[in-house]
Length: 271
Image (tube, rainbow, N blue to C red; front, side):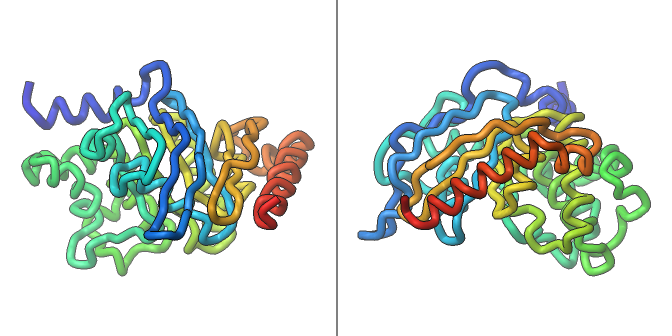
């Protein structure tokens, strides 16, 4: 089988396994003498979507980087796909940072195809693989556009397509919609919910927005102020519902949001 075909099969098939994909046990992390994460315990099943919310500066992004193998813990255990080795964790995780980091001298199609090019796929095959998904991602007709010619929402779609097309079973999303206005952000939440219904992956989403976490995720872990601990875990009432407006105004959803906010306030006070 040609490498590019194998890559595309992996894109459509990853994330469908059973069992725990991510396991954090007694995880701690320090910067020199500053303890940032304190005995974090978290399990994420294959195909599960888990949100991390907490006060600014509590270590949410650091936790995401630890999962992806970009940092090493100071103590405890961390495993992705059953392996604790940093290289193996990185090999299973596709990381999408807060900024889209699109290359301004590349077209939208070449930015989206960059993950496949980095895996050694030929330029023509990588572009063809990305082009097949442009219509589905609402980007049809913008293949040749430079990042400066795209709206904020479209830039985020290109960045997410680049993350997804890497074919890795775990998506680590760090505040992917933080820079967008409220209307565009709601639209992007609906769009991402649709994308995850279509192509299920194991996802860890960092966000400051409790409503966003409860809408997009199966479970939400609330972190305390630094040193961060998990002070609450909540199940989402109706994750990734097709009608977002109806979902976020439902009585059960509103109650879950209030519970999460209470836990967030208590955690921010260190109680």
